[in-house]
Image (cartoon, one colour):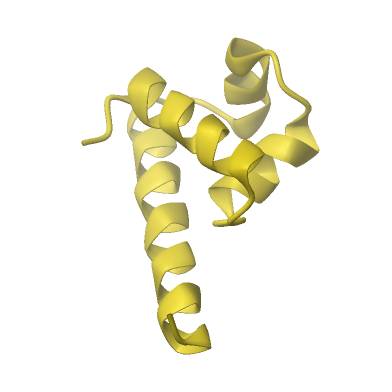
Length: 68
């Protein structure tokens, strides 16, 4: 995967999550609390970090925010 494709994918992930948070009138702090995760770790996951932990957190975020 090219660097450009990775950046575009990360932006798409971040936008999708941010919109879902706004629609639910929820902050990242509230989301972090629901996930029982550190705010910085959740922020990295939202930003599209490719590590296994971030992938796992994103899956949980998608479930909480009902993102398909």
